[in-house]
Length: 506
Image (cartoon, rainbow, N blue to C red; front, side, top):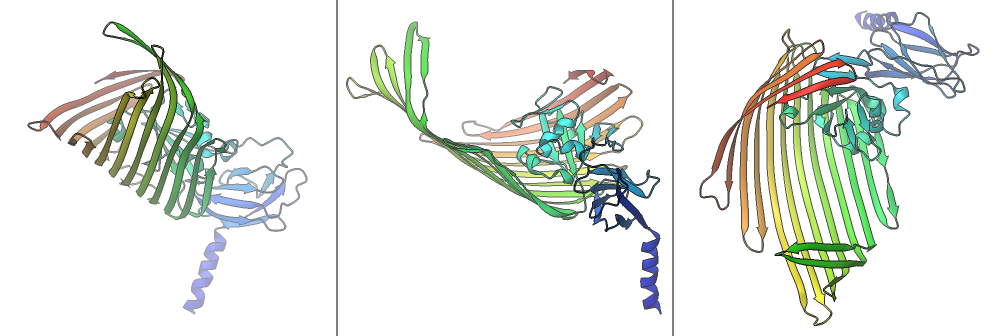
């Protein structure tokens, strides 16, 4: 009996919490079949989807669903707050009619040090990709070239779930995966310490299942010139796997560079005219990254990212140089290339209910660079076939860097919010040319206490910190050590929404 009773009770529970709606057309009140219905919880996370039956009926679990998005061929998309509707019929407008204006709840929220925005899907669909859709955020301007300005300032850093991201990734991320955008008017302590003014954190939905592919192709073939990117995402519940590629290229075989050199040295005037001859120049830049993220909203987030980049720039310019009625054949050769590798780990933990007892952030990054540089310039006189000028330079560099930081933010209280942070930076670089090798090791350690407070239209940000640096390098008889205080006071007065004043003291 107990084996029969449990399924019966389960069915009774599901049935008791089930809800039935009818999808119909507003014009004739006829039922709409095969309408896709996606359901979201209070956090705007998609939790289930289904299709309406032949008579327009849709059944769903009323226990967790708060919002519903309805799509059907020939009709405008509709977003519904299930807690506010008083009827069991959802009417859709035929697509030929004027679009219905749907106001989403809580589109903008002021949360102390940041403002949270939710962009309706109807607004995002007016743009070719999500990155361009960020133009919907007040005071944020996204150019078609990829540049970003907040309140006229280009010092903007973008994060994806707390981790630094690139324009290529934001261009290819699916619009449906976005939950909210947090704009920090005063950046978090770990960015304020770097002098960054604006931080924009894009938060994706959790508990998604499925993937998507994004492509951004801008390629010409005669001459070869392009700026392309591609991304593959796969989501499974709390996990997210991303593979991203971005690359630019330019190959020219008829590049002409004209120059006029006119200067005075040791009270003597010099003038040289260089007329360019069709030459070749190639440039290629390729970047690849693989990242894995595990995100449990309001609890923890972990992200690991592996990246590699390869850059090559070669130029072989021919010119006719004329100076003092003497004509010379000139060749300007340049060949540079570098390889870079990096691995980064980011961890974020919230304490209490949605971080009401504070949150902890830890970040560890390692980077490696290999650079090779070759440059030469030669002028051959047509009168005596001898080198009038013959300059050559070549060197190699190798850089290894490690950055680690930890920060704890206390919960908001009546007098504002406090945070503690500490960081460690290590960098070792080697430079080798035809004469002698050169090395330098830099080690910096620091920490700070920050206090953020706002009341009415006045807010201030106070930082008290200290940093210690150790430098060892070739040519110094002893190491260099220094301790530097790092205070900062920033006050903002905003008498109107569109007008504010800032004052910095450091």
